[in-house]
Length: 295
Image 1 (cartoon, rainbow, N blue to C red):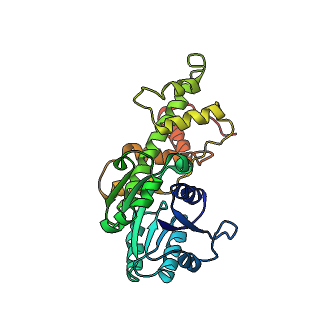
Image 2: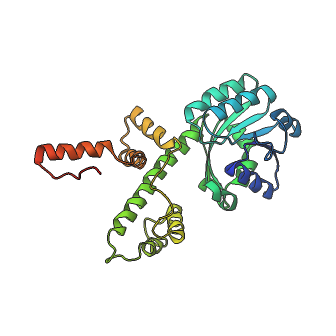
Image 3: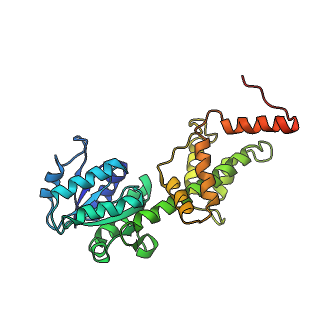
């Protein structure tokens, strides 16, 4: 099958490689001329047979919106755009409507697998019309891991469902990572009782109820740097955790663990927490508790 890939960063580049290894023909375009195989989106169009399939894998937000708008001008009726970035689900309907005015179909796909996807495959959640998704299944099958399709791919629903499902997936991911991190910190407080924390995590990889790929990655990180000296305790977020919590509020769904994991990331960015200063001051005021003087 023929596909155009717009965006040849870490994810897009690896996805192109996996698709080609699966026997598909892929033409890549990137705003960086050194990475691009064609000079423009119009050239990408001309390099693909109609009806065309074009996968957009660029940063979420403005870059994606601008790319969709440009594709609306160069593609033709019957073509399809697949939007596979970490976009907010609410962006999908406007994108689909813009393309529909030109007779171009739209599918949003939440993609999970990260930099390991080329080797292991990508799990995907698609949103869009059934017939359009079915048309693209050879592409999805080449990208996903081996095994039953239903274990790594889902047509989650209409436009927006793919990114909504991926948003919730990433919210859950936040919470799982936070639990591993807190367990790690607690174990490190017991130098004499538990002298080898990385070994404990490694022993959890088989047979335990907390085993997972994220645990495997934690073990890998600790083998590379057992004390995690090489990195700072700063955790950024790309938006999905925030959007998940916002949806919890909008739908009156309590997301205690996911919300707490999101706020923990915010806390990691503070050199000194004003909130903790306020708590220390209040404890001193009402109970006379000792406080630590500022340097």
